[in-house]
Image 1 (cartoon, one colour):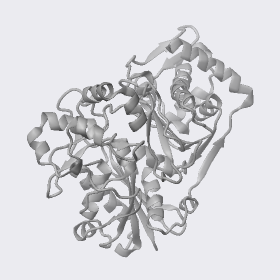
Image 2 (cartoon, helix red, strand yellow; image 1 turned 90 degrees about the horizontal axis):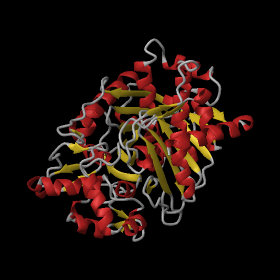
Image 3 (cartoon, one colour; image 1 turned 60 degrees about the vertical axis):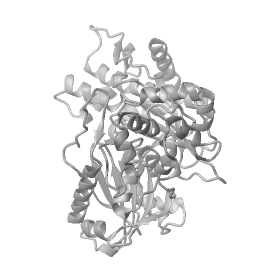
Image 4 (cartoon, one colour; image 1 turned 45 degrees about the vertical axis):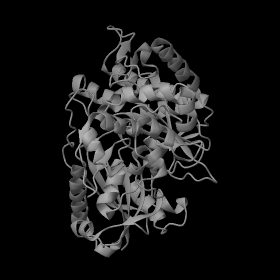
Length: 491
């Protein structure tokens, strides 16, 4: 047998998937730890993790895989990596972390990014970076330089979380163009590392790790890592990408007009375009997509709503303790479209990018004590989440993007027929749901990066489409009217 091994480096857990190379079927998957990994918060707004913990949990997840499928070392043909975006890992000359990683949800660098946006010029930043420097990786490194100068002086290379895992596997530091774009180190107009931003922040260009391709031989597993994981030394690491870019790949969203969505704790819509687009208000973010090339440019525009599945889980804890999510979904389906006037706004999980970083909090509108009950709350919450995501999608359309097909994993909020159908009706897009996740997507991508699969289409053999949901002509206008009412109330 021949396999590809995929890892998804999250902030909650490390997931692993073993993909049968010939059939394209996932034959084993595992995650570690059982409980969520600790996020260190030494001050309000800080969020850090020890990157060595990611490596330890990757090892444990691999052992769980091997307990299910006792693969031989030489049967692993290649490894792919998906990872939490926007983190900062600093290593010394011995390639060891100098401090905990500053991860994606850390907000300490907001001030630095906002100041850079103003002083470099908003027009310059949007044209060259497609984003405000914001709270991204480059701004986090600026914070380290200013606040931990002795530590900064010892840095050999800086990298993203997936780069660090590749380093642990291969012993070689590297990063990708898509990774540099998510860190706001990349100049789109000049197609290179931004000397101007580095100069403004006082960051030494030598700290940036050498470039490797998203797909291709990025390095080979060293003897020590191979012995630990039970794989053959020299096994290629042939893919890495940030989690939302990888989610799009996992759903075969590779061409202009194709969209990948997730609806877990937060909700994301990631649309592919062939033009370097940006929102003048920087309410959505653009990055270099995994299949980008000079001949066929591909960019991903990402919108995020923080309050998505977390609203559903909050309702379950406080209103539906006696029900499963499946039962809540069934209850929502019994309520008429529009929830008989009840509106819910899911903005209770921090500042929302699509609202220009405002934090209005979650709220209910038009709650009627004599007519509304738990079922109305269940439906109105799911409709409100879809409406928030659609509000972001309207921003993407204003930028000139074509949105045609939405693909998502058959998981989390998309398990609800109400949620999935409302998404199709409001957006006017077909919604396709697949059995896939980040780790299995990284495994498929590893097969392409290693040259086993000759094209992208071959990567997706064996991936099962669970459902295809088209907009309901009879309900499109009605739900559009409800959405306009929701948006009017919000604004």
